[in-house]
Structure formats: structure tokens, C-alpha cells
Length: 481
Ligand SMILES: Cc1cc2nc3c(=O)[nH]c(=O)nc-3n(C[C@H](O)[C@H](O)[C@H](O)COP(=O)(O)OP(=O)(O)OC[C@H]3O[C@@H](n4cnc5c(N)ncnc54)[C@H](O)[C@@H]3O)c2cc1C
Image (cartoon, rainbow, N blue to C red; front, side):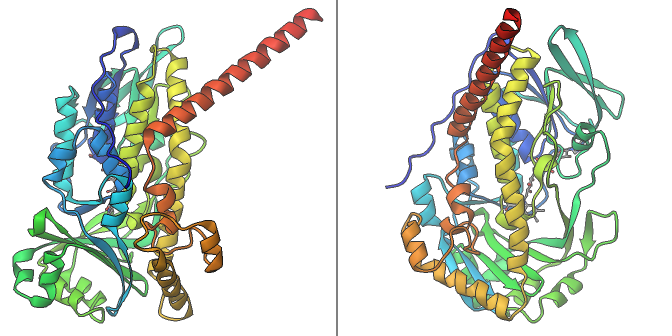
């Protein structure tokens, strides 16, 4: 018997003395998540978005149980379940086609209490937008933020002003920069240019209409039995899964970056893409032959936002890809953004006033909950890049050996004991299948924002209390001298 579902959070009411005006910059998955969580705690939220229309590119997104837990707690289970596919399992295959290992998603979901979900991004995005509006968040589009300024309406209270490219100014007690990987907010916070870091990989993203696939007995099984498949090959891998109850099939191809300097997204060439996979499992060229057009995305990361994620005034912070963009190889970038938003909301929910000290305390707890976890995700994403792309030979044989050895724990519903790992000569966290318990599954999937905030809030309060008591003691000593 696994964990129960999380409780749905009810919207709080808050009096004027502690009700913040919050501006969220960016209506991506992270920004909308933050808007929901902050609105749930009774603060006033306004979203400022650069684009003229709200929407996500036509592609799929995997949502892991730690992120579906967040969505459930925002009261979104029912609306989202209508759009979601619940794949039975995830398979790792050799690039030529042989099965190497698998993970049973339903087994893990049973234990964790929330599902692995696959969405068309547009569905997830629109439902988040609807929920944010339902909770009272407002939004303006065509409003690109160019700078942040600070004003001091009273002693001990700073407000931040988002300065728009069109000259407009929007003032708030707290501004949350959720402006994605090419973040202006990150550079404003750091006070210097800080471009994303290249990873050497790019992604082709395509959506196939499944009617054509259903005509081919070899391809039809992909639709009839929804699973997530990863083929791993030299310098490249391929991922696919079903969307919208079998109406669409999502494919992502990860290959070496050959894009011109400066470009982030360009139209891809279908023949070139097909040529890269011509010698792979014959089902892949067959699938790619069904594709008419494709875009390619350069994959970058955003490691190490130092020294801190928030401005010293307590009136400006950032989240999501702006803070910690990762390679998509753990399917966790958006998940981390949703967790960021949830944690930030929970911290702001504990405010008793609007002073700088109050806000700084909330932001300190927020960063303490988020920094280490997101840095570990970025690091493991980089490791997966290596593991997914090794060439056939000794290293690939060792990876596949480990994948198979760790498969003996499949079907248990929980991690193996230390003794058992030792007996088998296996090291915890060295399963190349990242989501299984002995990859990063043990700390990634069961995570819950609420107890983390609870614990770190108490930690920060007790640190502040001991600083205060040391300060008092030294004042007394000085007074006695
Ligand atoms: C190929 C690929 C596959 C992926 N697959 C997964 C997956 O399966 N699961 C998963 O969890 N994650 C996945 N991700 C990662 C995920 O897409 C991102 O981590 C997530 O979308 C980040 O959300 P965000 O809100 O931080 O940024 P974004 O979604 O980029 O949103 C930023 C928003 O800010 C707006 N904006 C930008 N600048 C300004 C400005 N100056 N002023 C006002 N508005 C501004 C933008 O218009 C945009 O709306 C994948 C990524 C890629 C590239």
C-alpha cells in the first residue's frame, strides 16, 4: 500500500497588512505555477508576459510523480487527467533495437501516490493558465521586462519596479522572474551578461499523426500500449511516447549541435534528420518517414546561480529555467519549475507582514529548499548525456550490465536495502536508469514541498534565534566592561 494522494490546498484569505502585491515575469509553466501557488496563499498576483499570445510549442512533456503531486495539491487532478496519458512503463533500448532494461511506471506511481503523466504541452499550459485566473491572478501580454528598479516607500520596506521595454512601469512588493532560459531577470540580478551554457546537443521535436502509424502493424503497438521508449546510441538518443489518448505521437531526437552561433531554434531539414538515424532500429526511420516538417532546439543549461537567487532587498527573486535550466534528460526541467513555484508560494504563505525582513526570511527558506535539489538535477542531466551517448564498446557494455543488474529490483515497489546492494556489488545512485530508486529516484520522486518548507523554516528561525541570543550576550558583556 503506497502513499495517499496529497491534500488539495484551499485558497487562504489574508488581511491587507500581510497581503503582498506580487508580479510574476513570464507566463511559462514555471511562471504560471508560481502564480497559482502564490494566489492560493492569498496574495495578489499579476503576470507580465512578453509574447503577444499565450501558448506552448506543439510538443510533449513528461510529468513525474513529484510534479504531478504539486499539480494535485493545486486542485488540478481532474482537469489534467482528461488530457494525460499514463504510460505503463519506460523502456531502454540499444540503438539497433534490442531491449536492455525497463522501469514500471505504474508500480512506482502506486508507491508514490501520484502518476507519471504525459501531456501535449498546450493542454498543460492552458490548464495552468485557467487555474491561475480562477484564483484571481491577472495577466498582461506584449509586455517585455527590460529592467528592475527599487523604491523605498517606508523605513524597512522595499518595493520593486518592473520597467517594460515600452516604457511602462509595474510596482510590486515582490517580483518573481520566471522568464526562461534566455532570462533577462537573471542578468539583472547578477548585474552582468550571463548567457546560457552550450551543451553540445540539440533536439529535433516532432509530433506524428497516429492514423498513419495505425496502418503499420509494427508501429501500431506504440499506440495501443502506451509506453515511453529511449533508444541509446553513439552521440545521440531518441525518445518517444503517446499523447492525447493515442491521437498524437511525440518524438524527440537528441543529436550533436550543428546550429549556427546565436540561433536557439531553427527550422530543421527532414532529410538531414532522417540521415542521422538511417542505421538505427528500423522502426525509427519508419517513424521519421511520417514526418513532414521539424524544428530543432539548441540545448543549453544554466548552472550555478551564485551567490544567491534573490536580491538583497527581498523584493526580487527568480525561478525555473532562469535559475537552473537543465538538459531535458531527466524530464525534470518543468517539474523543477513547478516545485520552485510551489515552495515559493508556501514560504510566502507564512508571512505575517510586508517588511523587508519578513520577505528576506521567506526567500532564504525558498532558496534553501531549492538550490541543492536543482543543482543535483542539472548535474545528473549532464551525466545522463554521457550515459545515453556512449559508443558501442566496453563502456556501453558496462552501462548495459548495470542497467540489467539493477533490474533485479524491479517489481518490489521500494528501494533495496544497503546490505542487498552490497551483496550484489552495486552502488546506490549508480543505476544508469535515472528514475529508478537507485538512480536518483529515491530523492527525486518522493519529494514533497510542504515538509521541506516546514523543516527549513524551523531551521532558519532557530539560526536567527541563536544569532540574536549571541548578539544579546555580547551586548551584555560589553555593558559589564
Ligand atoms: C526538448 C525538451 C524537452 C523537454 N522535456 C521536458 C519534460 O519532459 N519534462 C519536464 O519537466 N521538462 C522538460 N523540458 C524542460 C521544460 O520545458 C522547461 O524546464 C520549462 O518549460 C521551463 O519553464 P519556465 O517557465 O522556467 O520557462 P519558459 O517556459 O521558457 O517560460 C518563460 C516565459 O517568459 C517569457 N519571457 C521571456 N523573457 C521575458 C521578459 N523579458 N519579459 C516578460 N516575459 C518574458 C517567455 O515569453 C515565456 O512565456 C524539456 C525541454 C526541452 C528543450
